[in-house]
Amino acid sequence: MPAFHAERALLPSGWARNVRFEVGASGLLEQVLPDAGSEGAERLHGPVLPGMPNLHSHAFQRAMAGLAEVAGNPNDSFWTWRELMYRLVGRLSPEQMEVIARQLYVEMLKAGYTAVAEFHYVHHDPAGRAYADPAELALCISRAARDSGIGLTLLPVLYSHAGFGGLPPNEGQRRFIHSTDSYLALQQRLREALPADQGLGLCFHSLRAVTPDQLATVLAAEDGARPIHIHIAEQQKEVDDCLAWSGRRPLQWLYEHAPMDPRWCLVHATHAEADEVQAMARSGAVAGLCLTTEANLGDGIFPAVDFLSQGGRLGIGSDSHVSVSVVEELRWLEYGQRLRDQRRNRLYRPQQPQVGRTLFDAALAGGAQALGQPVGALAVGSRADWIVLDGTDPYLATAEGDALLNRWLFAGGDRQVRDVMVGGRWVVRNGHHPAEEATAWAFAEVLRTVLG
Image 1 (tube, one colour):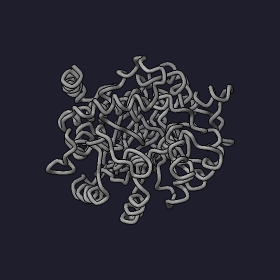
Image 2 (cartoon, one colour; image 1 turned 135 degrees about the vertical axis):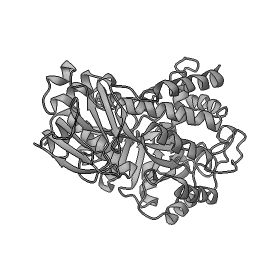
Image 3 (cartoon, helix red, strand yellow; image 1 turned 45 degrees about the vertical axis):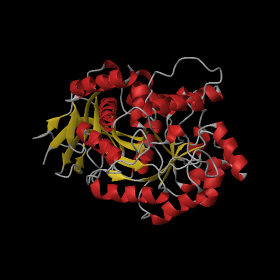
């Protein structure tokens, strides 16, 4: 049984010294022993942290990251950005989408993400026709995750309409559209086709993209155990349109019409009012926060201080991938609250005044819950997903306990991620992924073809 020895590691009980990890053939941790010897174990060259789950990704959007930062419309918003995204997605072949996803997942691993929930809504060919295998593009995502080595929860998306009340889809959405029946058939196909170590969840694009009957039918057909994700209340226009349609705000409507519980991940929930924050916290649903994307799109700031103070659960995602960085997402989660409140040190718990530790623990637990996988903790029975920070970095080498997380998250960066393991297998060593050069070359070719 492979064994590894860390001078210090962050366990569920806190920081521990001289930790011995033993990993079974299934890739799960079978022994986690503090104050243990290193005989026969591989020595780990720095502080060891649980790998971070990324709970929200649209892989193909990595290809356009940074290309929408040109002023044109004085009222630029998510809605004008979306038109650029539609133009990109209309050009991509299955092979190109797989290359983009593989490149993205390599970048995620090097940044310290060890698992991802892929919110996958591009289903059809550029003309909007189903492929011979309706799961073709979803299986491209599966292969990209397998080849890169990242853990995956695949979230095929039900997307049927252009707006509240069942508005017909527009031309830019032609590759996304499923009926309820074809969506359930896709779910069945993927249950049969995905590898055993990849998860599968339910996903509704948004309340504007599905009808109440579709939501109810899909929920009634599911087994009650899988994660459920939805975009909700990301932009003020969405809130206004929902009010015009139903007289209720998106989160109010959802909590009044769906069985809300810890299976749900409410992605963004940016425009949540006090009663909605309270309902979210009480239900145990995860708030899926994508700080760099929300900032890039000008969405707004989620009320995280109030949510966390009520026991709310949250996780982080890189969404449109304008940034792929655990550090940036967590840093901007805190900084957004500071900028709004004009005060420092906003996200902490009464028993945990260290902001970095509070953020990291919350994102680990919320991310694991949202992915529905045994990740996010260095504990027996969890998958052996971990990151090793650079033990020679002077900022980290001289920091003890939770101060190390503050150093990394508020004064460090991705360059301090040295080694990464997923499921008991090394996928990054000394800051490098074994496929990074070939993957980057293929990705560059896709960019030249699609954007040139």
